[in-house]
Image (tube, rainbow, N blue to C red):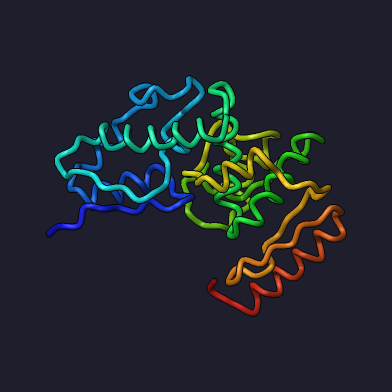
Length: 227
């Protein structure tokens, strides 16, 4: 028997989802890439399918068309949006924030603090400075970014432009969506992962505190070359 189940993990980009599905079911990659936001009835703000395909375990018929498969994944996201009580007019904004939380956090308990950091920054007009969005805008999959990428002019560069980027950068799961809606209480405006292996992340309020966290991260990087 051929196993027709496929697992789409939280934080996966649409381009990667297309490749996973194409490899699994033999449907040409170009057929997935040809599906436009309007084909799935996405909001007008959606520039692509990122953020609108729910990450989960699915079972598809290999004979199913690309659009039919993606519609199923989008319908599953609509179920989550409805369950979370998100109004259709707010969906794009919430999914955009949730997708960044998903890419920036390793642990669910950190998601709620990361959400608060980004919302605190938006409140004071401070750029989000999310490397995850910069990496997405550069078409890179690296978690670290270069000075050139952080200076690039694209709608996902949150170093250059304040507020949320133009749209989601990955497939957020239920926990990241919940965190976007229910951020933790706190005054933090910085966070820094000080150990990339364990995902240990420090949340801080002042620049001096943040610089201490960054120093810890740099020391970890030196001690763990090639990470």
